[in-house]
Length: 188
Image (cartoon, helix red, strand yellow):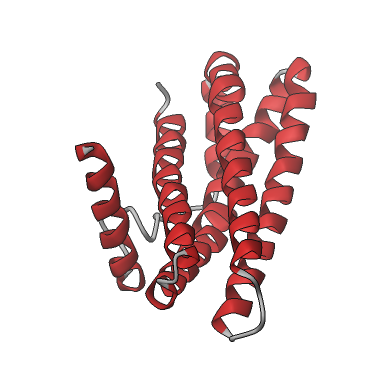
């Protein structure tokens, strides 16, 4: 497997862990345990605004653009995924607005938070599954070494601020919570 595709799939696994944790946090907020979980949910949203939107999706976009050039048959699928990245950015912004409103003590029902978060999580999971099941295998088949050299020249650089070894201190408590939650689910 190509190392860049491997890294993107690792990003997907990490984002999936975060999405599961977000779902749990929303449930805890619904049950009245809101203050600490709102802060952690905010950290989740901040992460989703930074790494996936500023690094992960632009990496995929560079690869998808090259696939569209290399394989005209894949062009419509590539275009659809590029549009989905824009759609997910808008969904991330909407989720951020709801979390910000709750943090600022604006009147936002917990039901609204649950709905926006559930919708976001569902779209993210569907999107990642679609990429992994359809486009990543095509990328592996169709792109050449020359294509990858072109992609690497335009691909943004950046480490995952939550899941990398060089994790930013800002995310330490969120990482700890996600890890504890993940270990809990594995043990069940």
